[in-house]
Length: 245
Ligand SMILES: [Zn+2]
Image (tube, rainbow, N blue to C red; front, side, top):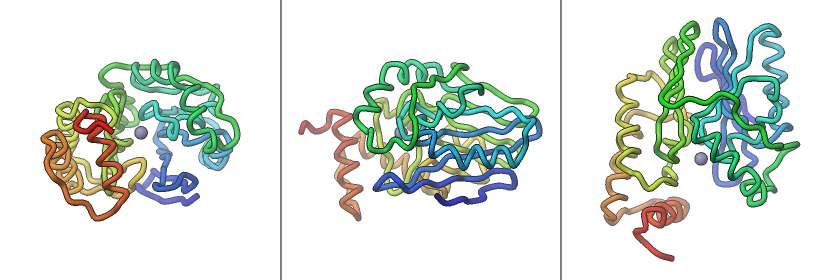
């Protein structure tokens, strides 16, 4: 695991245990609370995070945030049984429905325990921690239950899986909503955009993703550099029922 400072009080913990992509969780230390964005793949992977939290403070409440219901973002939830875990309301429902299914399909990536631990706080549109300048807001795109986090002090926007390089992975067929979400990111005027699988996202990357989604929707011919991109693009087309394989 790699540790990268991404803001004055914000750190990315980057895991490389899953092939094809890196996956990060983020720890943000604020005046009143500590926020953990996502919990990766089980209790073992959360041990270094818990050590770090104990080093920072024994008094501050730790708020755990699940960006969406996918297994590589939530299996460490069971390490935070005594904490508040927050997600979009649909995320909790999907986790409840698909926890076992996701475990069965990806069990080789469980590190330690991955007992079912659902978010205990959910919201619909947004939730703001005013004292800390932290906003969580619904940002459907990659999946319908995605949320993003904006840190008003550092102007860092955490987008979960809604942005990713070299190509985004589309699981919801509502592309118009996905594009609206990406456009809404611009109104936050972020200094920095970080995604779960790509730490550095530029404004140009965001605009290129909007362009890609429009081409995907129109089923236009797109040239890719790598086999990986061609594979994901094909899966995205399948989600939109553009191809049947
Ligand atoms: Zn995902």
